[in-house]
Length: 256
Image 1 (cartoon, rainbow, N blue to C red):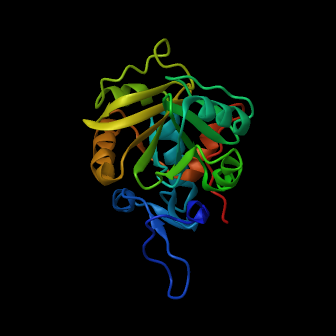
Image 2 (image 1 turned 90 degrees about the horizontal axis):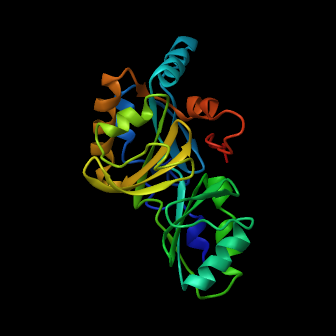
């Protein structure tokens, strides 16, 4: 069975005549209304920043460092691995550099998060360029594990900044306190009254994933909560700057 479809851009629309189609986030209209500038990278129309001038960039950074920022990261590739418990555990251990994530926590390996959802389901989330080689490696382990591309099933936002957890608490009852959700912690549950998954990526950074069809609604809820606390939308350029050394995170989307 060929797995070529896993390297293709799913549900892509638009594009230049005779060129490759372009994939778009369901939150693109929200970002565009907020003044976003876009670039096409890895087949996705992604938000780079919210203004060309140094002052605009400074405003993004100041808000995110003082309060919070939220960035559309729906372009992240999301692969769900399904299979027998033992085979799946062996596969993850082999492909994720020996990592053995447990329920409720995620391992960071190969520039991706490896998140067990149930004993026989693991969600792999990472930048398109980093995750692209994984399907070939995964299939080498045998036919018992099924790989499902859920990239356009789950939209995603990154919430970052010292007030990120307080912003999140305004639309979700999930407990993201450090003692309950340490870095690498995974919390499935309600996000703005929608089923979702949260990964705590760093001390002040959270990855929120939720249904693709609810993207515009979730953005509006996050923006309403964030604006009240002095936050604002940010682009991938600023999100990359905020990663900082030692986080193991790579947010910048390459131009491939």
